[in-house]
Image 1 (spheres, rainbow, N blue to C red):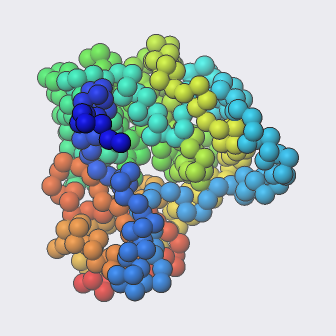
Image 2: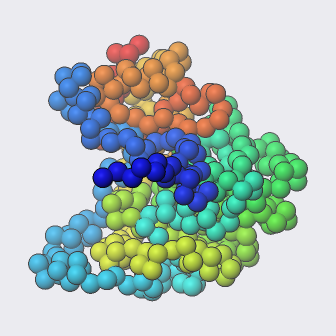
Image 3: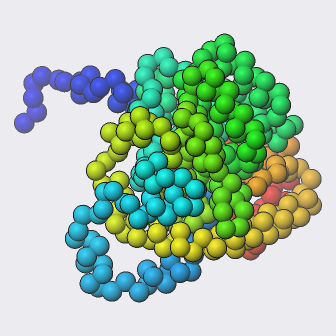
Length: 398
């Protein structure tokens, strides 16, 4: 029996939840968008046998062979133990391996169920109503979405198409002006940038962090695609700056280069004890599953597998660029990762995506405030066979 009193449930939610219901920036994926149902619709509508996914930004080659072998070796008893027991919540062994890789202390590392969760923890720790945050355009859309949920106001630093959507001396000059004039509390940076795939060199990153410190601002550097620009056997990471700068948080994940997206393991690094304590407050008691913990450790034991990941990504990129040269109406942007921004000289991104979907190809939109970004799609580089089909469809679009 329904109550006679009609209650507007949303009025009982706290202000953060109410904002989250309406502050949606929009990006590559959506909680309201059921992709499998959409794939079914596309197949029925256009009578397609296969759908090609170029939209996810994941490592299409998967994890290291040693990780896959260990997975297959799990016995029934192993699986029972993993499933019935609560996981470790300190995760010391994994943090020690990460610390050794980055030449920092294990105490400087906090784990989360993927970087998406860590971004939410950071926003919840730092931001409140009317705080200012700075982001580049384009960049990873969740920086803005999680900040807006806390009531923060974004300031956009526009990266120019003619500069391949990367930082330049003029970008840095504008950055300094914004710091002085508008005093943002938090600066979010993806490096390599997502979706452009361009790596910002270490000396420029340090200048960004130092300038922020001079203006009492904090910098979050998301290195989700960092494994694609790391040297063999090591890292090119802003984690090297943590020994000197207390206003810095560096993020990494096992979802991209390591090919373990389904395990949901991300981590934050900071030398600031107050930041680490704040993140721990928002963290769940069991941040990752034991299964994720164990297999992330195995992945770190076989870091040399990333050499092949980088090599294959480079080969596919070169192959794709060679093929796309023969399509005069398509303009690709240079990238250092496994994702690439592409645009049609006449069609908007939406129109281009419509044509691609009719041929069974799903790509990602490029979010951002600059109108030119509405012309771009983001493409995750697949196998040569998949890229051949993609280029064939692009030629057909004309």
